[in-house]
Image 1 (cartoon, rainbow, N blue to C red):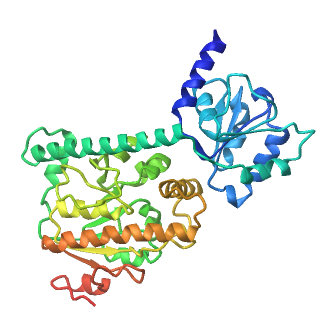
Image 2 (image 1 turned 45 degrees about the horizontal axis):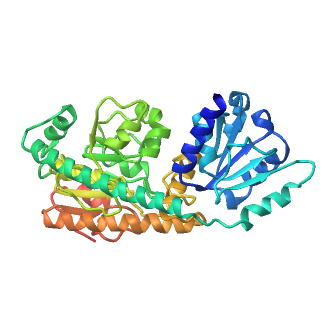
Length: 424
């Protein structure tokens, strides 16, 4: 009965799961050991830059005995004969095994099983197969991807309709919940005032931030890592990235004491949420625009500064200054104000997300940086157009960097002359 049940489960995943090109599954002696050819191949791939973005799944009968493997990047342990086990076998492009598998675990035509009998075949020969075997997608997988793409589009249209209806009523005091009431109470609370949006670029320093201790400021992401160098603390804090929320949520809740603004999707990912947290609805789309009614939704793309800017618009600020917004490659050395800004795991997860979005697994760090900068520049350009149309002035007080869309100003001049600001 168990055989029939497992066969049914596996075949369900086999026909419904799309193949991931950068996933490799390893199994030795029916899931009992970490040894032989699969181990040798795994350890070789771990140090090969060509496979830096790949995910390695190890199947064991008792995965808790092999937790030491979790210290390696992108390594996942799965228990044999579980639903996840079936899911990974149906999704991984490569199967690296020390023996042939059970009869019902048949690979698809575009999956590549590599059976390693350690005594007969050296790892070098097996490694060659990863680059020589073709990756032709069958018609069923193409259909699955096409269907998924159109379902996502339909889902996006449904969200736009729903959020627009909610925004229409909530901006008129109807259908509020606790979160939307907090948003409504923030509207125009700082009408006609000025604020500073703080990025996390390499130019950011504690001395500049000390000049802003009496100003309204929006901190972003892990800006708290500069707190040991400054007495400044942000008035508000913004986080929009789900990776930061899921990987650094506990740290965020401990360090951030200011009211936190985030997106609903990110809010759901936080294991521990800061006490004073307000979220906005958002849409996952590359077609960014400034909605102008934050009770409806706020489209966040490329940079958390878009969320900070739209919150500033909502709160009535009409004079906005950017500081530490260098628009440089965040994945380069020196891409932030400190070298330990983020963890290696978070950085690699972000890089893989970008590669997946662009469907290009061979992107270099420089190419990824160009992609991030291009998307950010598009967002800043649209924010500038919206601000000009609504009588809001945005200036760039960053020291250096690549952002030239907004007029540049000197931070000292702003702080010393609060009545009038002249662009450089």
